[in-house]
Amino acid sequence: MAFLAVSVSQPRLFPREQQLSCAALEAARSVMQKMKPFRAEFVQQVYYDEELAVEERGDLLFVEPRMIRWTYREPELKVFLLDGDGYRFYEPAARQMTVGSLKGRRGGWIWQLLVSSDPNVVEACPPSGKEMILRDPVDGTRFRVRLDDERRIVRVEHQDAGGARHVYLLSDYQPRVEVGSDAFTLDPPPGTEVVNMDAESP
Image: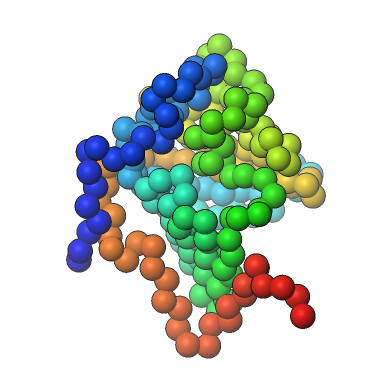
């Protein structure tokens, strides 16, 4: 299998001269920069009224903040690809693939907030150096982020507009991995419904 070349002189996640006011954020960015491209296992949980309603497991491949692959493996296979300004979400069991663009999207995602140059994204930064709260300056969503002793992200939590609490647990990091040439390719079988979230309603 062919692999994408990964250069040791790859672009930095954020400007070198940028001054950070949060030790936890600075540490997390530094570790991400050193590890990428990396893989990690994840558990995604959704709570309603503090009751666990959904739990899914899988692995992610992080190449850049806008180049990430989430592969859900339990309870069923699903693949979410973020590639540049576009995303694709393939659900084989439903025979459906959703596509869309980040352009014009209200609000951000945690990986984009982590490398944002906007100083207003940091709402709280306890002196422990292992926790922080990042606030999306567009829609106000607050992300509670926890780091391990090596300053890798191990937990992210936020609440959506409907009141559901989302928790993401990350573990088993594998740094500087090889990225297969087909890692960001999706080729669903004939008959798969494609839903374009950017298409105008008739």
